[in-house]
Length: 167
Image (cartoon, rainbow, N blue to C red; front, side, top):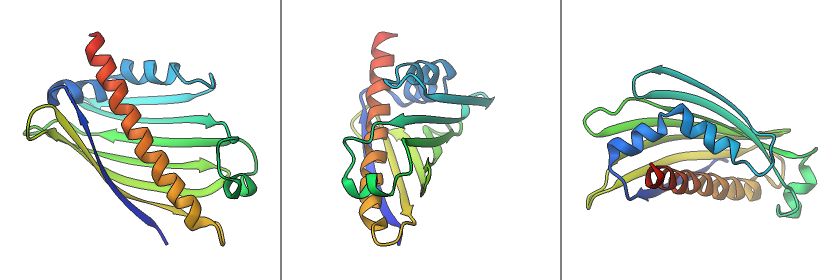
């Protein structure tokens, strides 16, 4: 059964600057270049002003994973992710996040909303679900996947804050 998730990430910068960063090809190239594995992959498509579609894949060390995950993993864990962001319209932009892992029947599907925060800054709300189709242990792995997705979104927020602070 899919595990639903919902979380919010806050950034200290205004929504226009955050959206411009999220839809900036150079931001994503810089982000993937900083991968500690050195073998990350990135494909970016900018389809118009303020829109972007990107796919990325990166391997992750398995030593820190629970034994239940290592037991069903046929090799290195390669996380795949696809993001799409639409234009900023009326101070709001919508995004789609999908993902999975090579070698495991994992799917992640989420919708995102980027908007101005009530007290300034920017808020990203993410709502979705993770599904792992592995008999007996899928539910345990789904919880881990949700944690990884939340960590990934929070890392994106930190990287955006750093990018904007440096520019």
